[in-house]
Image 1 (cartoon, rainbow, N blue to C red):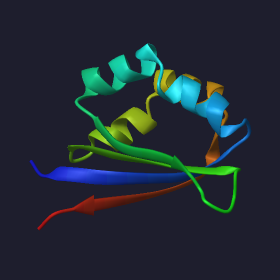
Image 2: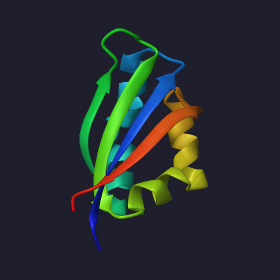
Image 3: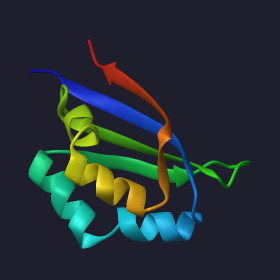
Length: 94
């Protein structure tokens, strides 16, 4: 199976520091590790403090599986990540 890089570009309803506290939490790190997902990058949009981005790598389909998991959605939304304001792109090295 191929390694897939998944980019999530999204709006946040809290400050970046508040969002980052949840993203960097031990619970989130454990969830990513258990799913075999590597977090490559997370950051704040340079000109729009209501937008953030995360970039993951995992086996093909794994990051989207986490995204669609109802338990993960609870944690995602608790961070201030606006679930319905997310643009997702998936990339594969051929």
